[in-house]
Image (cartoon, rainbow, N blue to C red; front, side, top):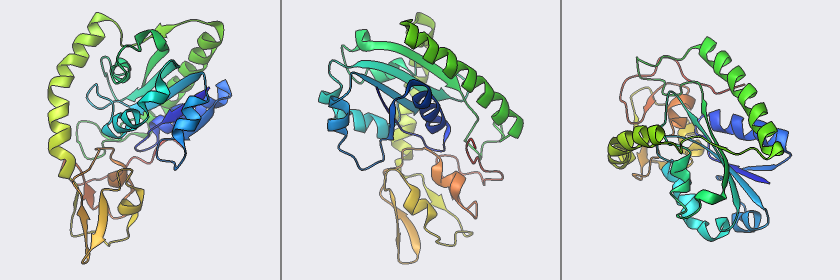
Length: 249
């Protein structure tokens, strides 16, 4: 079994690593410089993990799947995705990237994880939320691994209600995603430390003539917003960050 994942600020990485440890699976971020076609072709079961954005698979993961589509053919699939509240059919959204693969999915599940959108007043960063949701995730991972080993198949996101919720969110998010490709901003507190430039999974940023410039390729992962030592960065929402999300330790 091989686990591949994308994680903006650590939630999906945590799930992927915990699952892989219990299932004795190789685990790799799609950001790693590997011959992924070789890895994917050489395994029978591919597990994927990613954060759900508006019931959609993040663009960076969609582009990865499109690039390696042939290597997914005929493989059994396990889909694990992280969400803040509810994502509807966030796991099934991955199956839609590979038309005709529904029967290849042997397990799919959603995890409610701590909020990483650190500059939206309705979703404050709280330590107790991080602890509570991490414990719940740990318990769920153990159940999932036990079920898979027993041959039990569960597919979250495949029912009518999930599809309805997902379709509602799908109306809005693709337009937001496209519009906000150039939403990165660094304010007057920026010290040009380069942390955002070096950590961006889309290689969207560079320092030119004493300022950070973007290439209109933001995937809205919020990594730069949560890493900036000066809290000078925003994407999508322009409100100033007060408390950053540092992931699950």
